[in-house]
Length: 241
Image 1 (cartoon, rainbow, N blue to C red):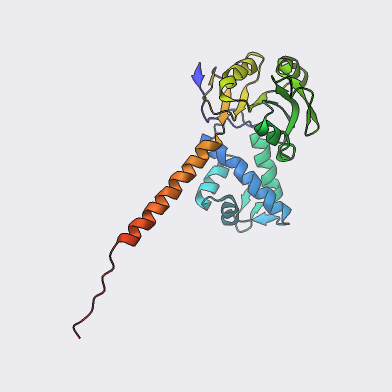
Image 2 (cartoon, helix red, strand yellow):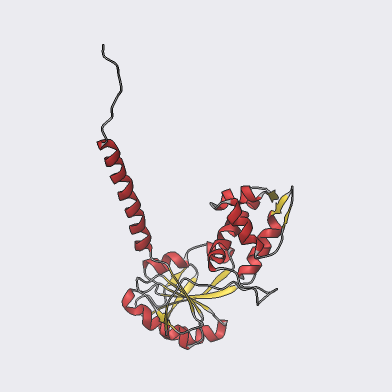
């Protein structure tokens, strides 16, 4: 068994042997989002500087990241927005429709099920599952909640490879074990717990409380710096009158 990590592998239909650094893989969806925003604004070509600014990175890093995909820019012209958007979408595997199951339909599960961005980004929620009989049978975002025991049949029927865990921490490992046992190889974990999974299973962890605590740290640092700056005496040089 191994502990979950943030590692993911790019899915490429053109060069399965090419290895893209994990940090680059993590930035590709950001570039895709920036390109989509540019396209929606009617922009057809952009420079590396413009795209880097839209994505919140420096242009040198962006050019290096895109070099792993191939050469899609034209010197003096820049990038064709639609073409580069397609190439990145193909590289990360969202030009196809990925069936996804969500386990745990509490407040967070409801919010995830209602997130409209899944379908527009290549993901289709095929099932919502929960062990609570009071939730089973309810309809959320047009999908009827099924009992957790329906997981195996759902995965077989829809050929699901991606599972989302939005359960309390105490249930997350059992849910992950069931997912792995029936062939799910990628898990997005929103539960506040670390999952142990076999080699070959990728886990991405989203912990909102940790992100807030990181922001709280930075806010505290800024407040401390402001206090320290205010405490520094100001000296003014002046001659005798």
